[in-house]
Amino acid sequence: MIVGSLYPPNCQSLSDSIIGSVVLRTNATSRRGDHGAITSHTSASSEHVADIESSSPPSLLTPAQGVSIQLSGKKRRQDTKTPSIEAIGETQDADQSSYVAKLARAVQDHERNLAMHRERRRKNQVRYRMKQRELVKTLGEDVRNLESEIQDLEVRRHNASIGIPTHQTLWTIATEYFLLFRHGFRLPPQALQNAALNFLRVSMAPDVVNGCQRGVEAILAKWRLFSDYFNNVHVELESLEKSASPYSLTAITITTVTISKEAMRAVFPHLNSDGKGGAHGGNWSPLGQRLLNQRLVMRGSVRFDWDSASDSVVSIQSQSDMLTPLLRVLDSLEDVSLVFEGALVAPDCRLASFDW
Image 1 (cartoon, rainbow, N blue to C red):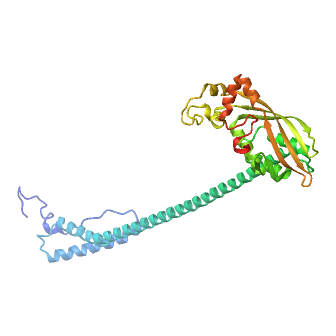
Image 2: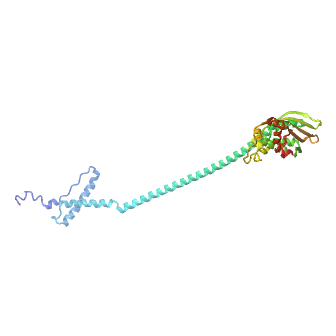
Image 3: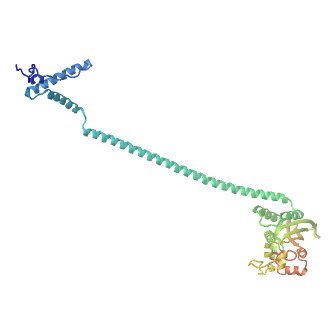
């Protein structure tokens, strides 16, 4: 035995051979079922360490090395169970491809739904426009039908107001004639024109004489011209007198008109310095200024000649005294003569374009 200050008394117990044969104890497990696995694992580790000890010199194998060898074995077994980086990368690539495919399908579905929605909107707009066009067309037809009905009703009302009888006589025709033209015939509505034309065609002969003109259209044209020449035309039937002939009737009338600027230009153009009724900026003469806006009340008469064979009027001859009211306004026969000297109307109110 070696005894000294540098060697403890139990140095033989602490030799390398004894310490190197010691095996590291593992932690106890609480489950009995794992006890057999732990024992087998410990025995396998002991055999492995024994092989290492037999192959290695005792002086080179330390307890720490044994522990490291045992731990390295565990790490190798764990490494065999861990997936590789390439496998992880392939899995991630597969997941990413699947996500991209799902996203592409979602985008396609969204675009398909959007296209369907646009197509539905387009079809709805087309149907709406068609309905609007049909509505406008229907409203237009309704308006035209209403206008036609209004004209028919106006004709009926006018016929009722003038009282067109089923069996006409000269007396009834004369009365209805003045009811029809009591306010002249300036810009009448279409319904009134139709009613007047129908009345004249029923009660007058086709070649009825009216001044120097013939036909029922000439009667309407004369009333239109007279109403254009003078404003505020009003014809009042004062009385009906039977003539010497049994086929003639005379109506006594009072006609009231206003001499407006239009009447001065159309009927008395010579009273202006340009000779054309001021159409080119001329000045009215003192006589013209005195006549302007004067209201004339003229007494007159209208003779109706009847044909018993056709039961219709064959001639209408009318005249009104314009000389007397002009004399009251101008108070001079000489001035009245100057007024009629170049006028387009005669003292008996006959119009130049129809009665001369």
